[in-house]
Length: 347
Image (cartoon, rainbow, N blue to C red; front, side):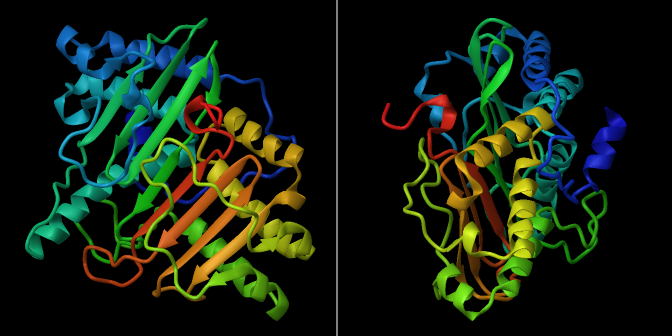
């Protein structure tokens, strides 16, 4: 575990998964998560368990956000002892792929950089790598349904497991501030660390490959929105198909958008990733659209939306980072238009 944590803080490149069947295997993530959640809860005192374990049906289960907050639901990593922290991170590791785990741990570590940057610039919100919260909804069991939230600034992971199968894994939110670390900070992610590199670079590569007619369809606004839509809301925003259709791309462009989707899906373990991709294939890639807003080059605010009947990906980079560099503060999310939190739309 210790080695994995060390690797995670530097392993921020994303494993790009193919869309073929080579990586498919029997679902096991739900069983791994159930065991890890039970082991985590077993380390807690009664008082801690009262904070970290809630009823499955509590309204707090669908409350999520990624902004700095004075208080959140759940038990803060800061208030765990070493054994409890290890169990908590093993639960995080069970819920994510190696790439996703690396991103999550690096995002947590980046809070130390934000603390240093804001301290030299006159202060700001609380920044603490241990200010992340664990909440389990319902007792984890092999036969029942239970939920999990792991959340803090710039990270919100939400799951529902039923009979040892992951039946919901959204919203899945990752962010980066700064988008690229430009200075050295002792004991923190090193200079050049770029947590969400492929999420940005592949999208620019796709945009730059478009001809004039394709760009006219893909670029839906001259300015990027200020943030992702419906942040903190229990269900994904409603969009009509907008932008450039997959069917109107050439083969190389279609491969780029598949690669970009795979980067996001690849934050989850192989079986959950495979289920996400299979849902897209079943609904049809011809129903997938790519929309862009804002600048067509880095350093100026930009945004994209990739959507189909079973998923919505949003990426926005418009804010300056904590050192003042423009458009160096990324928010990204994968949501389920059919219903986040295992709650079908309309219920």
